[in-house]
Structure formats: structure tokens, C-alpha cells
Amino acid sequence: MKRSGIMGLSIGCVVMLVASIGYAYYGASALATARYFKTDAQRKVASFEKQIRRSRARSEFGEKLEKVLARKDQLGLNADQWQTRRLEYEQQMVPRRKVHEILRSVASGGKSSFFLPRSFEVSVPESELGLFQNPPYDQAKIGFQLVGTMYLWVGGES
Image (cartoon, rainbow, N blue to C red):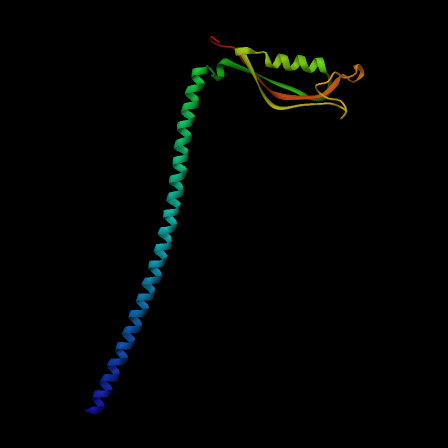
């Protein structure tokens, strides 16, 4: 009886050990699954937070756009009421008087026109000369470049 009791106890211990190993494996598997779901949930939360930030930025942009469009209407800046002319004076040596005439004509539009420059450059051909000094007659030309768009009012009251 002692032998059968020890044998039964040994078998019971082995069964308990196998059950414990199975339970530990199940627990480890459940832990790995839980970690996966936790990581996936954290990734989704980060993605949703990013989408919320984008959505808020789009909403703010929409509000600003509505304000700009309302202001545009107040100022009468409808596209069908304006014509555009592209002005392009490529880099060249031009007499100072001609540069003055060009700049005066571009700037003197009042409410009926405005000029939107894309690039502008004025330079002297020699470093000893200055833009704001009267040069000798033979050196009265300066480097000039002006590129942009002239908007001309054609419709409605100005």
C-alpha cells in the first residue's frame, strides 16, 4: 500500500505539473495576446489623435478661408471684375529715367489697379557707382529686372 500510495502521489504530482505547465502556457499566450492588443490599441489611439489634429487644422483653415472670402467680397476682389497683365522686364541695362518711368507707371494705379511683383532687382554696373548718386552722363544706365502681374479693375464701382 505504501508503494501504491507513493505511485499515486507521483502520478498526481506529474498530472499537476502537466496541468501547471498547460496553465502557464495558456497564461503566457494570453499575456502575449493582451500585449499585442494593447500595442494595437495604442497605435490606433495615436492615429486617431493625429486625425483629430488634422481635422481641427482643416476646420481652422476653413474658418480662416471663410473670413478671407468674406473680406474679398467686401473689397470687391471678384475675379470677373479684374483683368491681369503679366509684366516682364528681363535683366538688362536701362537708362535711369526709363526705370523711373516704369516704376512710376506700375505704382500709380490708385484703386483701379495694383501690381503684385514676383521678382525685382536694380543694380549698378560698377561697384564705385551708387544707386542714389548722380552718375556721369556716360554711365547713366543701371541693371533692371521686374517680373510680376498687374491687376486692372474693369467692373463695378471702385
